[in-house]
Image (tube, rainbow, N blue to C red; front, top):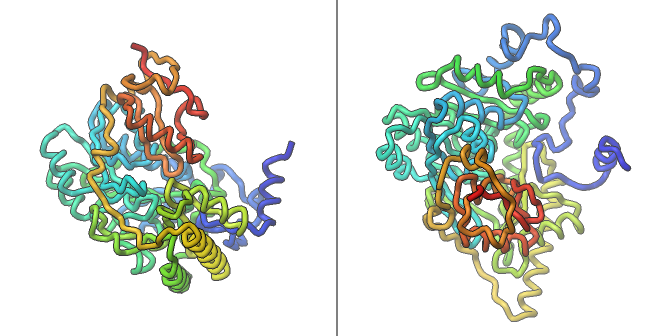
Length: 484
């Protein structure tokens, strides 16, 4: 047996480069956090209490609010998950109703389950061939709110895992016309306010609650996040009540110290470091435009499929049409070049970059991708194939993703269930989730009828080595359905 700490240390000494979260990329030098055991304390005198902040933690949260331009900012030590759970719970009543993007993270579905909510969905535009989701339509949002006055809150994710930004400002205005708060899961956009080459933060576009993961794209330890809130449409006491429920009663001072280091770094060095980061990003983006077979998701996607903007820090590399899957590309990058990507999907890989990435790291990725592209081009020429630009074609996501809702998520999970063979489950009501993780967007939700289309999709993913999660049977041979 090898202990985890031993394996972690061994890995840290290797030459594997992380194009994945956390955003500190193992590069951050925080002298005050050099020995975590020395600073790991509890709520002793002089160090405040996160659940009733009156001293140093209150001051640090106020500094974060000032840095981001928020009315109020809360530290989250249970990640953005805690923020999503608290925000949804605070903005809805038990057994109430929420309108949310189908592309939301699984934490949003867990919030709906815990509050026994009825859910109405907004479906992002979708290029089903590539598996790329676009943005959320303001028109669809208004149509849903107009049809159903019982909706108590709207929740969307922007940017998406792939860096797709929805037209948040328009959606916020529509929500507010109907007197409904807009919650934005901006977990992947904590870096947006610090350079004008990135999209505008939802915080500045009218969202009522914005949740950001510091650890995803900024130099902070895993599990650290912030929740920004305004209280015109959100009850402050209720929000703080639920933050107390979903956060640990013993918040880690090591994690909160890491957040303080991150915020101070942004305040003191952010302008200079983000300028350097932007130069590195522009260099690699310009270079990867030379690829003939692989395709880098670029700004040409903006303006289509409700895509308002693109987070250029996400390097999404498509392999569609090359004869190689996303997992195949990732395998080569990992095995041959010792580069670890953030995510692999059917037709693409995602390199998550941050301001802590080194020039050398960017160079390694650039050279590796150009070499893989050259290899694929030679293969295509040998086989008589043709290379060409990849076109992204969005269509209505409802046609590809919608499963029939038979009952609420809570009912689907709480009703008696039984395990049945996967191939015999068509037409039954699912009692569990099925999603790829990352990014954790469900193909199937408890309370929905299992369709032939879902089963074919799951089998296709399995053949390509991509296994759905959320189900008890990780081999995808059986699924739990509501008893008939």
